[in-house]
Image (cartoon, rainbow, N blue to C red; front, side, top):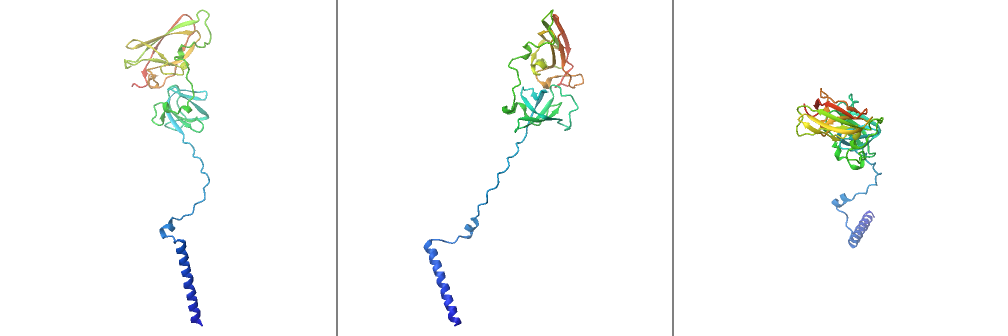
Length: 270
């Protein structure tokens, strides 16, 4: 009985295998090879949306001629709006500057692309090598700050008072330049009334060491100015080579006023 049962089981097993093989041949199905099985992967579930990366701050390098009323204005004429919590540090020490930020200091403005505001200002008395030149700042970050007039110093000024005897005063300014001043260079007056444009008022050479300018100003006019050779890199310095305070021109009234000035040295010359 045991042999018969075993033989019958063997016969049925062989029959079932034959049917399975014939069905696979009829349907054309073939089991996947090992290489095909390795390529079959399950599609992973979609990830959550990744957070947008924080825009990288932009750094712009230049010479600053004014920092007031919420704007920093560079010698190129480009004005950038600053944040209310603007952080001003010395570029070398990282601490607050221990010097006065007079017109002509150098700085790297760190600007946030998201807000378009200057968040930090790294200052120096000397040109800085880091950052993109301010002239290459994207125009969407620049605010119009220049006057439509070609020379603001030719615009009638608002005076502290008006002289009754003489409404216009002829002011003559003569300046003696250092002996090492390049003979082919021009001398200019940069004034606060022109946004500290380094080439606001061009003076006329009278000899090898003297330049002169004559202007008609209203009595009571007060302006502040510095002499340059066309850029803030060539602004005048005090006898020790340090930054000097702006000169003051006050017109009290009368018919004429003569001012004689002397430049001790230039910023770019020893």
